[in-house]
Structure formats: structure tokens, C-alpha cells
Image (cartoon, rainbow, N blue to C red; front, side):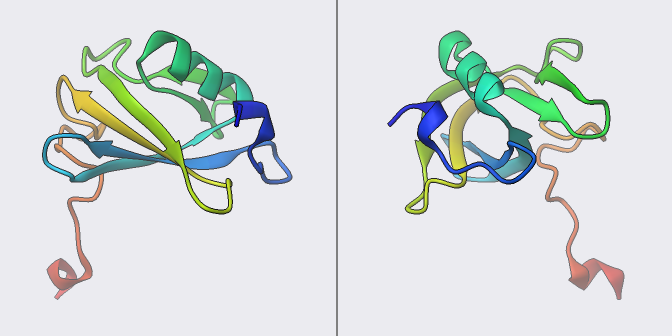
Length: 108
């Protein structure tokens, strides 16, 4: 299968789950279109589509927290991808290792 053959939503996007290949921790969820997925596969670093800024972004290009891509797989419905990476630093813009650092248990 090629990136073009995946099942994108009506905006031309699909969710990309990013996972630390060593620990198995889910680091983040972002969105990709065909071009972002092509760039990810070609450069072996994560590329995403920013829905708020309406532009591509290469994770770590400004922060240095690059994610080296080891594997990109897709789910059974071909409407989501999993990127297994070696992170060079925190995934979250807050400085946390993972964007999923909060839980409802913390809310009290």
C-alpha cells in the first residue's frame, strides 16, 4: 500500500499515533495528509499537518526534539497510522516526555 491508498477523512487527513519504539509509550497524536506521510517516510523524521496553522511541521525542527522514524504502519481500516520513533527529547510542547501526561484521576 502507498500513502495515497490510505483512507483519509473529508479534510484529507488521518490520525498519526507516535510511539516510543523503546518504551512503548504513546508520545503524541497528530494529523497527516498524503504529503506529510510522504515526507515522513522519505526523511525518516516525523512530519505533520497543523490544522490550526494550516501548514506542515517537522517535529523537532525548532526545538531539537526530533523523532527518528523506525517504522510506519497502518491499521486494519487503513485510516490511521502508527509511527514508532526514537525521540531525541520531549514530545510535548510543554516539555513533558509525552503529550499524555495528565489523567482524569489527577482532576480529583
